[in-house]
Amino acid sequence: MALDEGEQQHLVEQYHRIEGIEIPNSRAHAAIHVIVETQIALGNELPAQKALERLMEEGLARHDAIHAIGSVLSEHLFGMIKDGAREPGATERYYHQLEELTVERWVNNYGADPDEEEENNAE
Image (tube, rainbow, N blue to C red):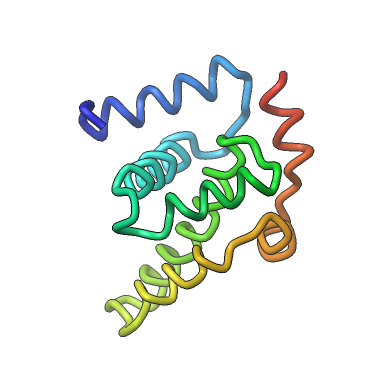
């Protein structure tokens, strides 16, 4: 967290390149990673840290858990962009979605395949 956001994003992009993980939009993907990591670093102030712990307890690798949280965040951000002005209660709904996020919900709601992610991370 001592690095500025630009440096953090560069490191995330570099990690994905080195690991051979193909991402359609690496800048946007890295930005989501950085936002999620920042939310996790805030500890109990936001529900992201507990969501990360819960997802990892359910068997996800940390990187996959970041992707799961990032999926919820991306949907939240898209809704804010689509709806224009900030909708009342949007942040609270996002927090609630994180509190309710499980591996099963991630797979069902976002079409994620943790086994495929694991294979991509291993390559």
